[in-house]
Length: 176
Image (cartoon, rainbow, N blue to C red; front, side, top):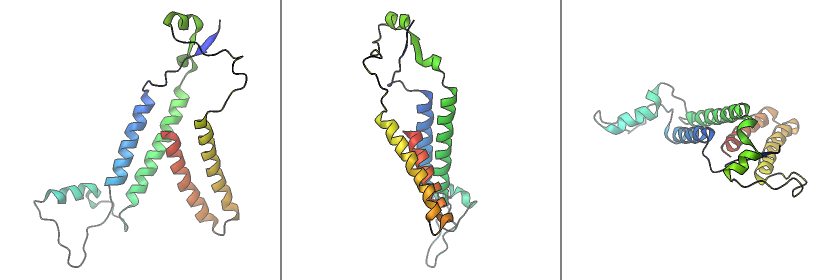
């Protein structure tokens, strides 16, 4: 009995929902949160006690509990956490995915009236999809970035830049 692989590409899967939520939280955190100290510049005035903006700025600055010199380090932290969680979600999805969920027997396909895939003789060689090719090229680019640290005059900085590049690529691949 022949087994056909039927994939509904328009169906929203749990991974899509998780990644969409991660995207929203990461972008919101990166755009809204700051970690700056209280502004104490010459000539500046504090917010009035009853001003709602005072409360909003306090919340967005995390209650001034984790202040940093620049006030923007939280943005990189949010991006890194979002990229890491997206990579973990994709990894768990790959581990949890079973072939049984994606395959149906020929009898089931005929009974449901779904179209059959073309026979193997029609497509003798497996083809790489453009998405897979783009993802592979991005991974090779990150590998090249790490390799270039070998001939860099500042290898520690080159590796740090490569790590930052890798985080961005992991984020893009996970969302892709």
